[in-house]
Structure formats: structure tokens, C-alpha cells
Image (cartoon, rainbow over all chains, first blue to last red; front, side, top):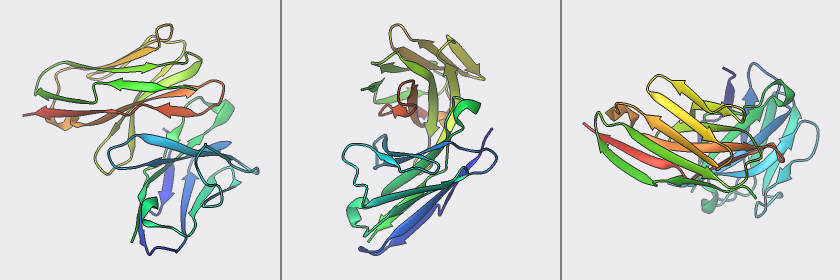
Length: 116
Length: 112
């Protein structure tokens, strides 16, 4: 099956700093990538949808200035958590969608963010 | 807006039992429905994917069914094992928005 990687797998940072998370589709081109957030013992909540070369579409309640998404190529999307605070601590998971080539999303392994 | 509900929220069974996990969704305009497994602190492992035109899929001891008209899917696990203990999530890929909506999951514990 298709492989999606995320880097880093975990990160600990101080409050007020910015953290960048990378999501890569390793063996296919992803027209669309999605970013999800999962709090402890809760399900995945979609944060935003990003299409290569265009601005991301954010779900209601997600601050676009705080969670910066860049989808610069068909194999790479990045999520930057700006001025992180302890309440941003969560598990962030990306998925990549091949578009017309398939109707299945492929998920990355996730990134555990802890903000002190 | 698509809503996905999973019942029960938690389930504890002795080893060897057959069990059924339920998933229901409100909008039948879907491309597919996918069942995932998630171990504590880990990412998602895809178990079964059912296209909207299909009724069921099987993999080993797992069987998933889909009834679009009633907005329901079930995941059947035969002869459960302690290694099956995990949280099981179902997700529907919506036709109109091209994005997935997840249920809250069922946390399964299989006791030796």
C-alpha cells in the first residue's frame, strides 16, 4: 500500500515557540492532504484540507493564523504550530489523498506534540 | 454535515468470543467506509476498506459490512485474542467534500 511519513514522530517544545511538522507521500502524488488533531481518548478531528499550490481550507474553529499549512508540492505538506501553548499539545496526524488515482486516504504515523 | 457514531464506546470480552462493533452515519453520499485500529499512543492501522458499491469485505478474522441505505456498518471479529485489544475507529469518506469523518471509536479489551 501507499506510504505516508511524518516528521518528527514526537516533539517537545517550550511555550511560545513554533513547531513545524512535515507530511510526505513517499510513493505517490497527493493532490490533497488533510491534517487531523487527536486529543487523549478522543477521536480524530479534521483541522484543514490542503491542495497543492493553493491556500488551505480550515474547519470551523481552527485558527488559520496559528496553524499554518503549506502544500508546496504533490508529495509534501507542512503544518506549523505558531506560538505554541500547552493547550496545543496533541497528536497530529496527516493523510494524503491521491485524488482521481484512488478513493482512499493514506494516513501518516502521527506526531506527538508536547508544549511545556 | 456528516455525523458518525460508534457503539459501544467500550467493550470487554473474554478471549475466544466473537464480537460485533457498530458504526452508523447520517449522510449516505459516501465514497467508502474504512475501519481502523489504533493502539495507545500510536497512529492508525487500516483494517478494511469498503467501497460504496460493495456490501462487505473480509480479511482473516475480520469481516466488515456496509448498508448505505440504512447508514450502518459493522465490524465482526471472530475468535477474539488479547492482541486484538485496541481502539477501533470507523471513518466515512464523503462524496461532496472529499474528506473523511471519524467516529469516536470503540475501545476493545480482550481478556486472556
